[in-house]
View 1: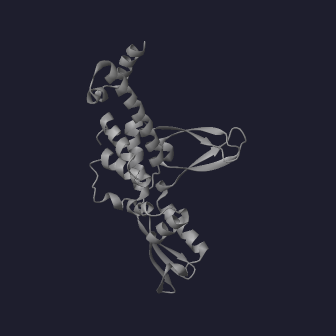
View 2 (view 1 turned 30 degrees about the horizontal axis):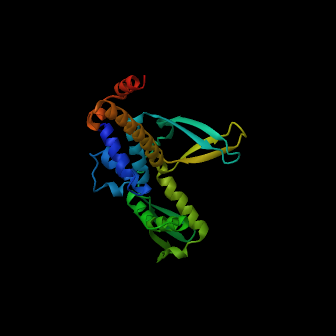
View 3 (view 1 turned 45 degrees about the horizontal axis):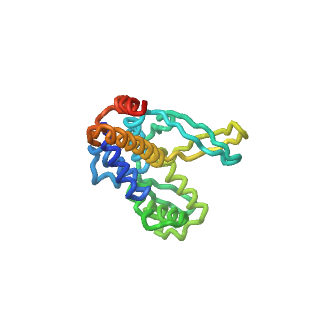
Length: 243
């Protein structure tokens, strides 16, 4: 896997500001892993995407993750730190289509894929998004052997199927267990690798652009040449400027 250059990261930052949030993961894989088959990318499961993004993030910024999360009970910020190995699920989603028996119903379903996220472009209501994604994952519903539609399912049966869909692709939903040091409340938060890397790249790009501004204004150097320097060398020149 090729290592992303500073120029690549600035391009991701720039392109990322022009697209929808749900498209950002695909952008990262397209630019960060050009060896992937572009035609197969939409069919990749969310868990498969996230596992690759964890690998890509390790190449860019290392394997350690640090974050501050507000406690849902008292509101105090909790410091969270973990390693990629702590959230990397070993079991792959080998079987993308599955079947579950629910009373008189036999439901055949598949796990969510990257292509399913495209519906987020036209929907804003959270409940409608959930219903649409659920419907896309349903392949066939039979009651006592006869094909029926989704309306034949009860609310509890739908909840059970949603649970099975999530369990079938465990990397797609990573939960971080927390305990607030201030009020001792225990909780879980969903870790979103796409959002995390998006924030990291935004911060990194802003620092890069500031370095380019300082060095270009002081020495007249081109952006391309400044970005090709190591962070240590750039900082050495900036220290001279600001001394």
